[in-house]
Structures are given as C-alpha cells and as structure tokens.
Length: 153
Image 1: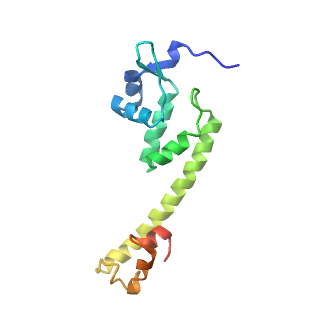
Image 2 (image 1 turned 30 degrees about the vertical axis):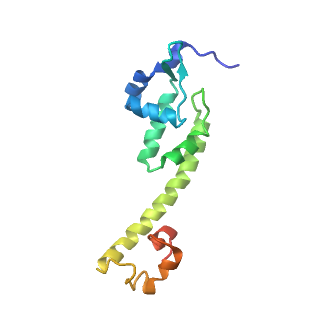
Image 3 (image 1 turned 90 degrees about the horizontal axis):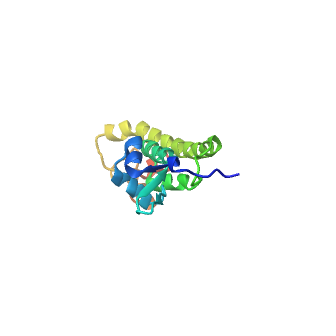
C-alpha cells in the first residue's frame, strides 16, 4: 500500500538549497535537466520531495568523482522518482559507477606511467618522437593522444 504524502514531505527550493549547499539557480539547472522534478503549489511555487536532497547530493559526489553530467543523468534515470531510493537501488548505481571509475583509474595510471618518459625525452613532439610515435604511425589512428587513450604501449 502506497503511503500518502503530506506537506511535511516537501521542501521549498530555498530550504532544499540550504540543505544541499547548492544555489537556487543550480537546483533550477538540475530541474531543467530533469534530474529533480518538483511539484507546483497553487501559487506556482516549487516544492521538492525530501528525497531530492539525496538525489542532489549524489550529483555533487558524482561530479567530484569526475563523472560527466550525461553519465550522472544516466545513473539517476535508474532511480525511482517519488520515493527515497533503497539500499538496493544505490548498490546498483554503485556497481555501475565503480566500472566507470575503474576505467578512468586505468587510463590515468597509463597516462601517469608514460608522462615522465614522454616529457623527459625533451622533444615534446609526437611527430618526431622515436620512443612512442616512430615515423608518426599514430597519425593513422586520428588526432589526439592515441596511445594513452587506447592503452597501447
């Protein structure tokens, strides 16, 4: 049986801003992206569910972890609207984010491990570098740091 919501289950945007540390304009931005969905009063004022505190806090944490807003949107789309996410909901999100973080950690580790050698040679030019890009073979793969991004070498 679904519980009926009372007015105590809702917060005005200013209260939500104080509880999350976000500005009102940031909350409106996230609302515009569909990440939170307020109800409207008869006077057309926004009222947010208390569970939106968790949704917005998740956004802040995910951004600090380096997730793009599009990635955060994908993850939040998996959570229920209108009720507080359960521990099971959060575990599913955590497993997905863990995979993304593991991929980013591996990419950063490859970059760190190659950085000293690349800059240490002094040439600073992929077109002349005999160590990582002899005869500019990376050009065939397209622009940018191909070896670091692909995990090769």
